Image 1 (cartoon, one colour):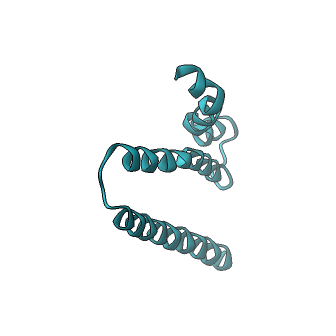
Image 2 (tube, helix red, strand yellow):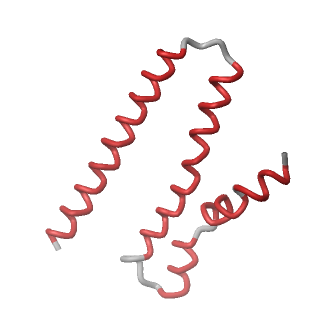
Length: 95
């Protein structure tokens, strides 16, 4: 199991856990473009699928209820990301 993790996900977890934004801020002193390095943390989103597979495999939850719950979570996440993009465009337009 550890070998499987090392082959598949170790590099993603390392990239997502290194605080590039803080390291680059220390080196360059500029904060404007560096904060977008925080998006590297989204590399850990693959774990959601694994968790859902484990829940589906080890519990006796109603499958249609699980699918509706997953759909609701996807809709909330999608709405959040869409609003973040709109906020980014608004900040660019203001100056």
